Length: 368
Image 1 (cartoon, helix red, strand yellow):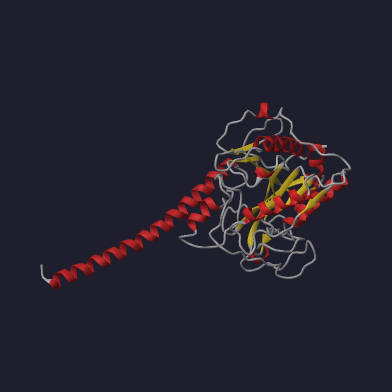
Image 2 (cartoon, rainbow, N blue to C red; image 1 turned 90 degrees about the vertical axis):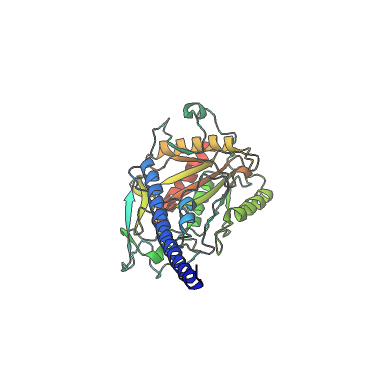
């Protein structure tokens, strides 16, 4: 073979290779998008009336390599490690303009649609409790509900008995209920009057009204870095438990995100005593492994069952299913440690605060 002919063949092979890579990249992008939509649909089938629930890093982390974009964390994955997000930083903003609470801003050209829905349970009830089990374990709920929590609270005790923390402290809510959202209004925010800290403060207020001393730690763990938030909040909780050894219950308060499409977001809403309330979801890790020991998971589980049962009994439709996962999310630090998602990014702060007050009141009734 002549050098000239060999050179031409090499150029041709290079061209074919580059073309194949380009086609392959496009195919990979299309496949990732298809896989993401399929995953979202599969979750939606678990909750048929709610639309597809936006998955967290299980989907978006993989897709980020093909098309990087900010990720809004949703329900935690069932992995045994705390979730991480590909994007290393977050945009933490304030509302686009200072408005009176409840006043809707001008609808932006790129505004999205807010769907107010009563998110379905996705499973049958057992004594008022519906469970979405992604833990890999099988439970007899009738049997488990007979097990009472192995902790109790004392009325009028001076020392704090409940600790409220926020791993994702800057998760924000809307300030208006108008059937739409402006993208700039649903970013994370340090404004504690319109992020999860407002809901946490309402829990503390309700507990104190019931005679239960409680403290709230509003340390920001998710900004400017989202990755590592659970490790940072773990240190916060450890320090608080050392400072307040009387604490028996730790609640990590979050808010969820349900995005059926890029321009549509769902606000799970119930009506309680004629007033809108953000639906809530309790998350309990029920895993214990050699690498991630969780000796408290059974106590947490029974605590979660009783709290879920009482909340659902007092306020029909307020609770989404109790979500069981094969993760710890720092719940190994206390036998009374739960995560609670209050509403989503398009619920209003007022709705979240109302739900927080209902949660605090029922928590006191459950453990007194």
